[in-house]
Image (spheres, helix red, strand yellow):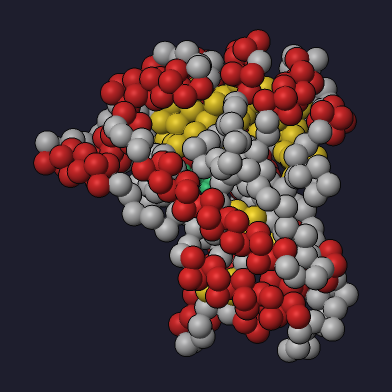
Length: 400
Ligand SMILES: Cc1ncc(COP(=O)(O)O)c(C=O)c1O
């Protein structure tokens, strides 16, 4: 009998972390590597947020806190949801965890029984299916297409729902595609959910503030108020406020679900870091002025990457509405051979050859459930992006 649990055999390690590790190894061996794999902004956390953390330390806010967040932070979250999303929640309906990741995990652990299905639109954030498996559920992948800009259609959602469906996990703007659903597109999906009252929606709004051009973010409970009682609205400060290391995520939903999530957290990690909670209050209540400034930079980088990749024969690169990723298709390159002799028979082979032959690290599409594609994170400097895209152009031109 194995010492390790059977649950572990159901999940795989994060492929995005594997790419980062491989890139670090090559860098340590002296290779000139440009990493386009990281899912975090290259900006520093804004000064007012850091100052709030320093003040919290000085004031001795360094002890255990209530398991799922201090009242002041829950209040700030309620105010944010009202201000930005038109959603009314009380502090008893709010849970704060160690990052958005823990919040989603708690919710799945708190609700899934054997045989319960969770509909996950692909391309998806790598952790969703594995979290569902860890919690004992069954991920049901509903694949969107490039032709539909990587967005799930109502017909695809309808087809994925069975009597065993417990949740739909919804993520807009999306990691890995950057695709954002318009109000009409989201309404078409919530209309489907209205026909299936046993299905709840877990919406991961992590990239809410990273939206470009005239794209307007929207979230399910706002679009369909009748879904309020079966929606868990998840969000966090990691991406928009450049606070990935502080580890604060939150969710708002029905009181019984929030209490169940608290129970899980109380027997695993207890409260999220006290100092980070005070910093998150400043993030949510303080100035939001840097958001448009950062978005201008991200939009410029998005346009740079999309235009340079679109020049490549065999690559199709849609323009995403938000987040800081693009998800080009390499369908036109499959079957070719690289200068170094690698056969490009999959997106994984493409990403591996690209890293080994040019030092550019990207994540292959199979990791996100839709091939043949790769994900570029443009949360890095313009210089890095220009150099990396030039290397990708040269690599692709060398394929025969
Ligand atoms: C879609 C999505 N949801 C959730 C998370 C997790 O965020 P956090 O770092 O707050 O745990 C990420 C991080 O990459 C993400 O891309």
